[in-house]
Amino acid sequence: GQQVMQIPQYQHVQEGEDFTTYCNSSTTLSNIQWYKQRPGGHPVFLIQLVKSGEVKKQKRLTFQFGEAKKNSSLHITATQTTDVGTYFCAGPRVVGGSNYKLTFGKGTLLTVNP
Amino acid sequence: DAGVTQSPTHLIKTRGQQVTLRCSPISGHKSVSWYQQVLGQGPQFIFQYYEKEERGRGNFPDRFSARQFPNYSSELNVNALLLGDSALYLCASSLGQGAYNEQFFGPGTRLTVL
Image 1 (spheres, chains in turn red, yellow):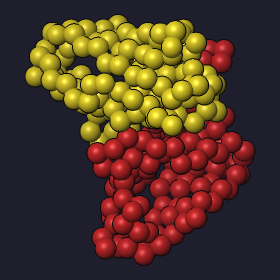
Image 2 (image 1 turned 90 degrees about the vertical axis):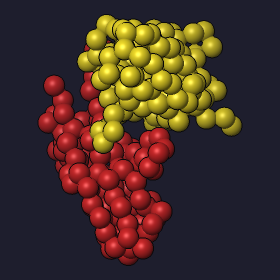
Image 3 (image 1 turned 180 degrees about the vertical axis):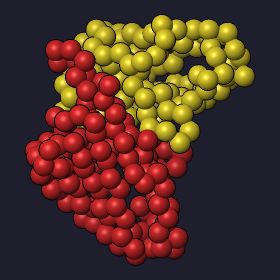
């Protein structure tokens, strides 16, 4: 079945350094979503990418969707302590008709040293 | 506006017992999904309900069941609890049923099985 893999599993950076997490799917995705989960919190939606090669920016965050729609990345420029958390990508897998299940990667835990 | 609410916040059960978890979606959202998240992993899809019908099921045993009520709130039931059922159970609501909808997660119910 469809798998969504993320690397790295952990990333520790000094405040001000950049950070990138990568997401790869075994199958082509109709879209990909990114979520952030703070320690002790719940996942919060960041963005959705739909088009092949799409690039979206949110302040210091840049999201990309691969040309083949099988991979994606999240890049954070000049990390801050508020960026700490686990970043998940998630892709839908259609299970019949318009029914689907959202498959999450294992996430990348980002810690930032002030 | 109120977000997704879940109850209870925490729960401790013993093996073999049964548990019911509750979720109220954001007003106007007709879709509710349930996820299981164990420490260090991404959320694992359990069920999706839309307009009171099951629209997706993950790879969980029949001990897991759910339903959605006319007001779109939902319950997740787990029978014959096992130690491995200990996890954070997340409920997420979305406007529509399709794969392009942003998921709004609740704070979760932390279940501990002893």
